[in-house]
Image 1 (cartoon, each protein chain N blue to C red):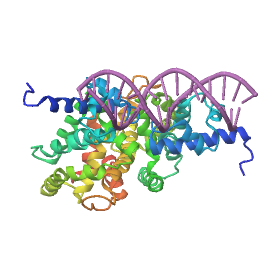
Image 2 (tube, chains in turn yellow, red, cyan, brown):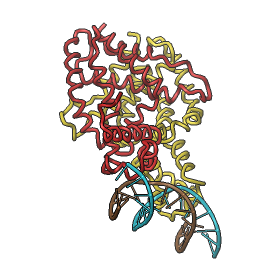
Image 3 (cartoon, rainbow over the protein chains, first blue to last red):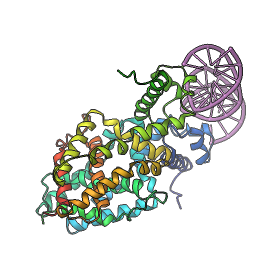
Length: 199
Length: 199
DNA sequence: CCTACCGATCGGTAGG
DNA sequence: CCTACCGATCGGTAGG
């Protein structure tokens, strides 16, 4: 039951979700307001009762569905006992979600390519608490780590996840000219952990 | 002197280059044929003497300017004496180019988001020789490496470069709410090499 | 290679 | 929240 939402709130959410699905599939400029209206089951004009214009929809989608917004807080909440299992947990949750929704990261890239990263500052502002939490837990378990700067640990961790996503989309395709040995997320974890851990 | 090119070839190249500049700045759907014509200094109709339609222009741009096409062969040509200096050289060349042209990678992302990676198979086919060369040189210097599979070495190397590019665009901005410690490419190399090398 | 044009579709709005 | 409409712009083409 979503009966806690008013009719207007439900329509608002339907527009947002429809826009998200279409944007990650077709890009921003490649998606029309008419498509969004149809997918959200209302008339074109009805959208403008909920959003001032197309870009306001995109901004709302970014601040709701951007992978950094969705993933960072979840990663930070981890109750792992040490850094190694922490990374393994993060990678496992991550790959499971990516394998089901490979287009999840398109929002990241669309924002960079079609808006030149215009919304990144506000995105970072909203995600700053999670970054601070990560910073602290890395400082706490720093005995385990070779790397001094928590930010470098975070950046290379994000890099690990992104490289899994992107090289998979490059190399791991059924229509490849030459079959490539299956991409194993454990290999990525191994390289990263050996690169970061003290032992 | 580009006098080795005929007039028609020069126009063809001008359209290609104009399209590249506009695509990486505005995306595919966000760029109009009229903009390409104007930037290439000819009338809209003139474009169709050189390309059948808009998507054919994009395909030509991808197969000419895609970072995998431009970077992989150059990396492979390296004459570095061991894997460590090889990676350092690659990273140095890479970051130098990225710092001057931060939008270079947009073509990669645009192809994935606006075409769902439709051109990846042909891209891989064209880049296969370079991949094979890389494969062989990794096999040759495998004594230095912890990692068995050359493809994992390549994927994580590409991941290293991509993570540098993407976390920089996330964290290293003049308009950030909180200043972040400067992003050092040497740190990325360090984590990667320690993760991959035997010693 | 340009001029002039085609039908289609775009984001957005008025008025109810 | 919908219907009907606006001017602008889109990719592409005919004809010279």
